[in-house]
Length: 242
Image: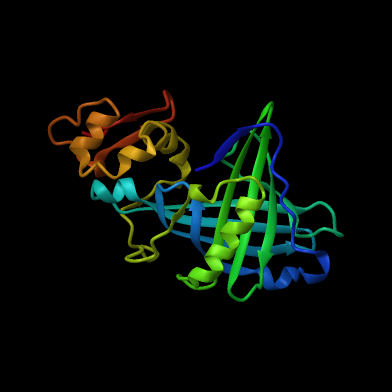
């Protein structure tokens, strides 16, 4: 999820250079709060490539595919670049599935051992798209810390009401998913998540209701595990593998 507004990206003061320890950033973090609410079991892993380049890998599952009884794993790896060594907590991120280009990635607060707050923003013509996340080294975080970090987000002009909590219970372990369809996640986002408004997600109980919402008939014998995603026409096709 993103917060979209007219104008420039919000002012997001980064962690001061003297307090920023790049090597201590490395490793896996649990996403505790993030803008949008379509995912669960969300983690981010930072790995150092060089003094000014990192990789950032996200892993997540989606609530919607839970509801239609499909175990699904999604991974995506982007690149973080430190453009100004004097300001290392303000970086630029490039995700392979973002055709609009790179975005700023600002670490606003962290103690490296427990919590981290970042804001990501992309300027697109006369609008900007922002995302924020609160991370923890564990799958939970002290509520007082969460509230303090939310206040810092509000101070930027973004709205902490856009945050939603991430569930880290009953997460899949490597090899447990029915499928890893990372390579076609763009189609999934466009044809399922792009067509199902957030407020409708909680109302979908099974694949029949999903089919009604995204305007196709499930058809006899078609199950979620037989759905395929066609790159040719960018459409979800529940019949292709019958």
